[in-house]
Length: 157
Image (cartoon, rainbow, N blue to C red; front, side, top):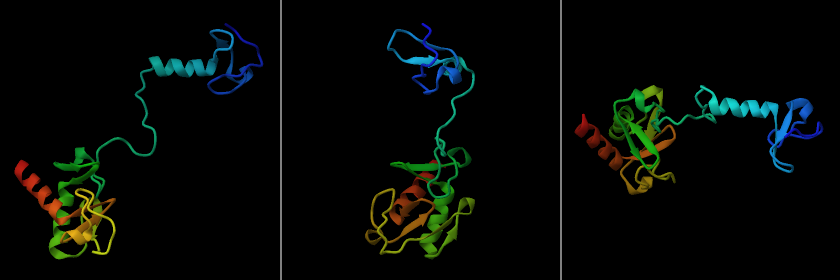
């Protein structure tokens, strides 16, 4: 049903002079302009794939070096945190040498101070509760979880 020329679209808020011809199903129901109608039509019948919203995509990535799951042979997960086999090897080097090591994609992994408050993201233990904690990227892993990851990688390869 056509509406007055001074009506506004319930979706975009534009007047009919901007959005084009406006329609509403019943008096008092939401109004939709020609622009919004065309946009809805494209969304419903269009062949374009939906676009991701926001800056990050939904690919699973290593929390240390940001490598995607497709670009590594093994990616180990624990409650929303991930570590690739390259970072497991680099973190193991950090534990054995007690110094910083360059890991995959040039990320630097280094030992965490025993006084730090940030726990291992895999098991939740604080640096003072385990022998060592390695930090890199946006994650931390303790030596105990690192041993488990190493065992998983050896077992499955």
